[in-house]
Image 1 (spheres, chains in turn brown, yellow, cyan):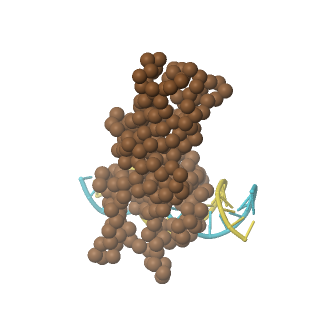
Image 2 (image 1 turned 90 degrees about the vertical axis):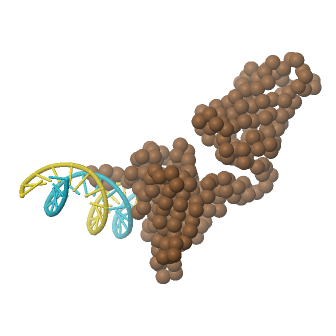
Image 3 (image 1 turned 180 degrees about the horizontal axis):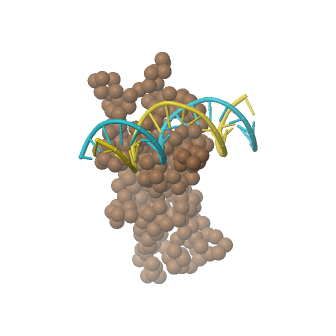
Length: 276
DNA sequence: TCTAAACCATGATTACCTGG
DNA sequence: CCAGGTAATCATGGTTTAGA
C-alpha cells in the first residue's frame, strides 16, 4: 500500500514524546495509536529530519508485545542532538517514511544545540565525539601578562583541582558537591579535551565522626592515562549538565620542574567557582 | 602487581562563641 | 561590633587491605 500524504486513512499525523525515562538513549517507543495507521505493515526504516534540516536513518522495530520502537541508529540521533531527560520531541509524519522532528527544552523553547546538529552517521566515533565536544560552549582561556592562566567559563559551575599524588581518587569540593546534588549521584561523565567521554564513579567516604567527602574514583585513572596527565597537573572541571552530571574537563600541565600552572577561574554568570 | 576501598592522620580553613 | 580563642569541617594524602 502506498503511503502518501493524500491517503485519507491517515488519522494521526503527528505525536509528541517527552523524554522522561533514562532508557530513551537506547530506544524510543512510538504511540500505539499512531502505529495503527500502518495496518500492521510499518516500514522497517525511517528518516528523521532534525531541526537543522539534516536527516538521520533510524530503524523501526516491533516487539512481541506489539509496541514499536526507534532502535537502530536512534542512539546517533540522541547523541547528535544532545538529548536529555526533560526534552520534548514533536514528530510530524509525512505519510511515507519521513518524520520532521522538533526538539524543545523544559523551558518550552526550541533546543539551540539541536538546531546546530549535523549528521555524522557512518563516520568514526571520534568524529562524533569531537563534534559533541565542540557543541559545549567553549571556555575563554587567556594567558595574563604575569604568566597566569585566566579561565573564563560559560557555565555556572566549575572548579579546579590539582591531580593528587594518588591519582585514582580526587575530591569534589564539598560545597559544590552538596549544592549541585553530586553527592547523591553514583557517577559523573567527564568529557576530555578530545571529546572522549569517561564514566567516573562517585564515592562518598565517611571520615570518622568528621563528616564525609565526595571522591571521583573508578574510571578516573583511565582518563588521566589517555590524556597523559600526571600528579601535579591542574584540571578544571565545568559542570555542563547538572541533571546528567556531565562535566567537561580541561588540563593545564605542570612544567618540567614540577611548577604548577596558576589557573584563575572566572565566570560569566556568577554562581559557584571553587578554587582548591 | 595494579586498582580501589577503608581507615587514619594532619594541617588549613571556616564557623561559632564569648568577653571586652 | 570586634578580636581572639575554640570547635567543627574540609582537603589532602599516607597506610593497610582486598580483589582482579
